[in-house]
Image 1 (cartoon, rainbow, N blue to C red):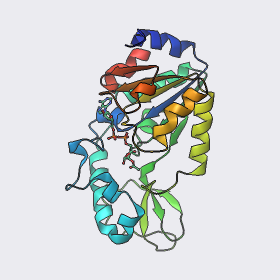
Image 2 (cartoon, rainbow, N blue to C red):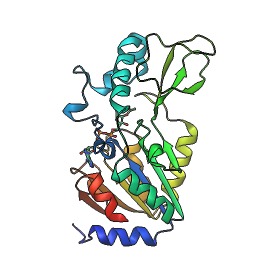
Image 3 (cartoon, rainbow, N blue to C red):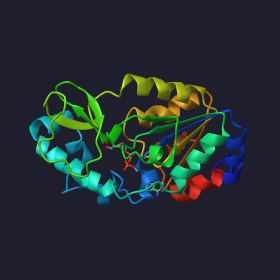
Length: 241
Ligand code: OAD
């Protein structure tokens, strides 16, 4: 460690903190068997996520986009939270003010029991009507095409924030408030290349937070961190308990 801090030092800081915010990405779910986006195993039929997760892709070929989401729903239907998700639930019980911001759409933080949660990229188990914009939970593992709205018959889309779309105002407000008030920001398993989440380390740091990264490898954000640990989320995060 550049500043000599061990994970046990960080654990002590976390337990003394009044306010801890956590930002997670696909790496925390990798230990549940969910493929990450930017690894070779995250590719589907040789498409990159940027080619499918966009309003343009959906307008061009909604069936193709739904096939990708159906593939991901099938994959996720069998996955369960791991020791890292569970450790964050324990920490939420111990720390007075605790907030999780996740880029993951898999619902595993909520399934583990995290209460204070912003799912800033949406949730794969929700659908939204392209006509009347109503949002509903939907746990069908495979949606027949074209999925239609029970309300108005319009075409349904996944309730996901796609490339080129804005995050929901409420999620942004909750996230920035949590980043600005936290004593410690833990960043777990994100490549740190998709905005605005990629800027969250700097936001918290500018407001005086101590910023910790846990990832399998160094990221473009690692140099901004006060301390960065390399390893698996399911092994590192429980060490904070
Ligand atoms: P990425 O796939 O870009 O990055 C996953 C990160 O997790 C990488 O830095 C890996 O090194 C790390 N990692 C892998 N396995 C790990 C493990 N077991 N423990 C700890 N770290 C591990 O995923 P995200 O950063 O989440 O957006 O991607 C951000 C967004 O881009 C996603 O939310 C998604 C995608 O396109 C939408 O779907 C809108």
